Amino acid sequence: MAVRGRTAQHRVWLLVSMAALGVLVLPAARVAADQNPAGCTQNNLALDIGRDRTIVRDGDTIVYTISAANVDSPQGRACNFSATTFMFYAPAADGTPTGQASVIRSNVDFPAGTARTVLGTVSYSVAVNPGVTNTVAKATAVGTLHDAPINDQANVVKTLGSAVTQPHTTLSTFETLVGTVPPLTALTTYVERNDSSTPAPMVSVTVTDDGCSPVIYASGDANGNKILDPGEAWVFGCSRPITTPGTYLSHVTATGTNVDDNRAAPPEAAQVSITVQAAKGLPATTVQTGGGQLKGAIPVTGPSVPVVPLGLLGLVLIGTGVLCMRSRRLPGP
Image (cartoon, rainbow, N blue to C red; front, top):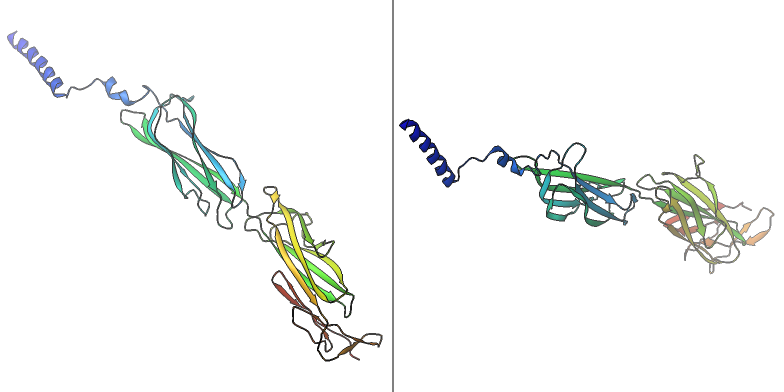
């Protein structure tokens, strides 16, 4: 009996000593205390990223909104998040979410039961390479998830894309002068080509010339759908009389509506200049018409470049960077 008493006293002394040294083992329920709330089973942090535009062009501004919530789901109770950092990654020039990074919120606690909370907004000016059709942004949340006796780092990632359209056309003009003496006729041909870097069909395509009207569609709509499809080139035409020598300058514009976003396509502009002048100081020359009557010829030239009409009618025309030369041999005597 004395031995048993000493053994019991020894056990009590051992427990007291361990408590004093801080090595007393806690009950199992105390070990799991960081599973918070107790019995939670879900990583329910819902990270949302939204934007105010779905189809954009270079230069447009997209406003992104980043929000989050942490609520129970039908599958179980949500666990707490703590020390959470929310980041936003803007689209890069290639459209991937690898552009400028910014911190939306840092060191945020998101306990279970937190309703949807707007964390911040970010404005992004679209600037992508030609041919990019989708621009993607990314939001991330990194924090401590209290889901087990040992805390885990949890990562939540959301991406969101916006369609990109890059409409573009190229306007070209060509001039032809018909006749040998006034009145002459200036025939203008206009070519409007859809050379967009992304598929961008266009409707309501019109060409106007402040020096010639009406400008009339001639050809180019290969499938007859009344849409200037990517790769198509529509041809328009207009004619006007030239009655006296001089310089005739006109301004041409082309417009259309992009089908993708129902907005006006970037307008195209061109300038056409025609100079018609008598060949002063040149040797007298004549041409013979079909009726046998001799008449003085009026040379048609570009700026300050007289063309001696020795049996030839020359034409030098300048328009939208295109230099055209058209000549015709008249019948001999």
